[in-house]
Image (cartoon, rainbow, N blue to C red; front, top):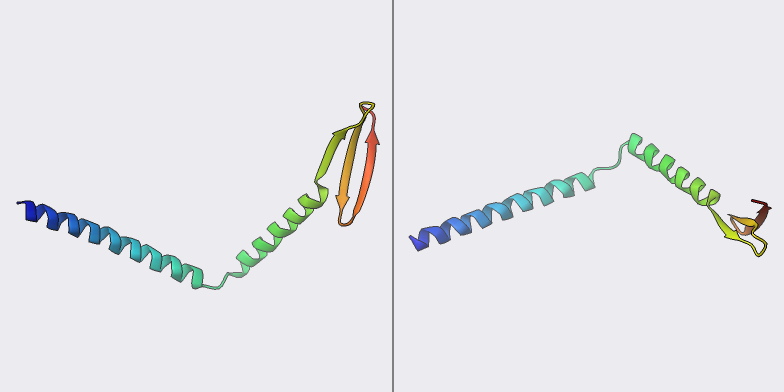
Length: 85
């Protein structure tokens, strides 16, 4: 009886291993496919949006007199804007 339980356990483990190997193979096949045109266009538009967000990103700092100083970083140029709150 104990031997049958061990065979059942080994059988179950081999079944799980087989399923995992099948899933890995399917994933590898999916990764091997070249991207579609719509995926390329979506990726490019997403990159452009991220670049725009990075360019518009600002840091706000309180000045000595309580002024809010807004610093814009555009490429290599830093611009400062002082606003009274």
